[in-house]
Image 1 (tube, one colour):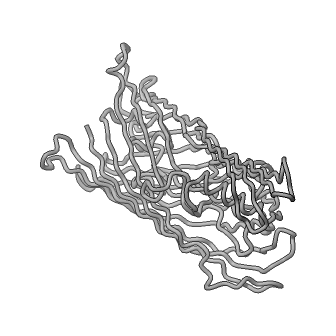
Image 2 (spheres, helix red, strand yellow):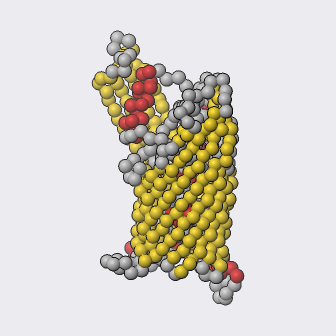
Image 3 (tube, one colour):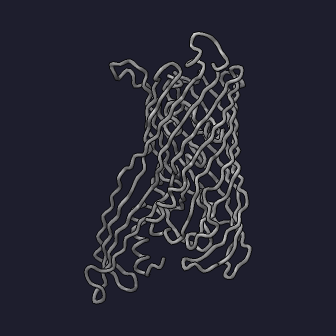
Amino acid sequence: MGISRTGGILLGAGVLLSMGSAATASMGNAPSTYGILPHDVATAQALSLFNNQASATYYNPAALARDSRGELTGGIFHAEHDLKATSLGGPDPADRSGSTINSTPSQQLQLGLKTDLSQMTTFRHPLYLGFMLGAEKFSQELLALSADSTETGQFLEYGRQPLFISVGVGTKLWRGINFGAAMRVTLHSDADLYMVTDFEGTTERERVSVSAEPVLRPIFGFDINMGETFCATQNCWMDNLDIAIGYRGYSNTQVRINAEAEMDDTISDPGLLFAIKAIDSFQPEITTLGVQYEFGGHTRVGVTGEYQAWQRLSREFEGDTVRDQGNVKFHDIVIPRVGVEHDVTDNFSVKAGAAWEETPLGSRRNPGVNYLANDRMVFGLGLSATANNLPFMAFPVQFDFGYQAHVLKSRTWDLADSDGNDLETVRSSGNVHVFAGSVTLKF
C-alpha cells in the first residue's frame, strides 16, 4: 500500500496523538498468550478455569464462588522475547544486523480485587465480585498499539499489550454448581486531524480531535463439583471431581484516523483525505472445557481443551487499511493443556503445567505484512506460600511466583513486498521467558 510523504506524516502524527507513545505491539493478547497471575503462568493456564483468584473474571467468573474469602492482589509480569528470523537467501535479502527481530519485553503492573457483595443486597445469597487490571510498561503505557508493514518480518503473537480490564460476578446456583458472568473492556479510539502543509512537511494551523470509547465483550463460565451435585447425601468417587466450562467473546484494540491535509497554492479544500483503520491485540472467541481431580486432598491434576476461533481475524483484516494488502489467512485451533498443583504443607504448594499451541496463521506468504508465527511448546513452574502471622497484618498474606518458557518450533516463510515481489526466505524461531509475581491479602 503506497502512502505519499504527506500521508506518512499524517499517519505518524495521528498514531502519535492517539496512542501517546510509540510501541511494539502484536495480534497477541497477554492473558491468553501467557496467563495473568502467577498461578495461570505456572500451570500454562491448564488450571485457570478452577482458580478462584481475581483472574477468574477472565478465565471463568464462576470460580469466584469457589472461595468465600475476599482478596486484594498486586502483581508484576515480565515477558522476555528472543525471536529470530534467519535468512535462507532469496532475490533481495534484507540487510540484517543479526537475526533477532523482536527483543522488546512486555512488562505489566497488575491489580486484582475479589469481594462478597451479598451484604449489599436483601437476598443474602453469596454474590462475589471480581476485578482485574493490567497496565503495560508497569502502568506507564495504557494503549500500546502498532500497525506495520515490513519487509523483514514481524511476529504475530508477541509484543507489548494494551490496557487489560475485566470485571465480573460469580454465584452458586445449586448444590455444587456455580455460574459467573463478566465483561472484558477494550478501547476503540478515533482521531480527526486537519493541517496545512508544504512539500517539506512543515505544518501549520493544525486541528486535532481525539476520542476513545470502551467496548465490552462477554465472558461466561460454569463450575461443577460432580460429587456435591450427584452424591450430596453420601461419599462417592466424584467428590473430588470438578468440571468447568468457560467462554470468552472476541476482542481487539482499534484506532481510526481521519486526516485532511491542504497545501497552499497547490491543493485546496477539501485537500488530501486519508482514512486509516488498524486493529491490534486481537483475542479470538475462545471456548474452554476443563476437568480437575484432587488426589488425597493434597494434589490437583487438571486437563483442559481450548478452542480458539481465529478465522474471524481474516475478515477483520479486510477492513484494516494497513494489513488488508497481505491476504493473511487464519484457521481455528485447539490447544491442549495439562497442569498439576501439590500442597507440600498447609501453607506451601508447588505447581507446574504444559501446553502445545499450534499457530493459527496458515499462509506462508503474506506480502507487505510478512507475519511470522510458530507452533510452540509451553512449560510452566511456580510456587505459592502463605504467611498467617506477619507483623502488622490482621489477615493471611499469600506470595506467588510463576515462570513460563515458550519454545518455538522452527518454520519457513517467504517474505514479499507490498507489490507481491519475492524478497527472501527466512526461518523463524526463538524463545520467550515469562516471570510473574504477586502478593495477595486474604480477608
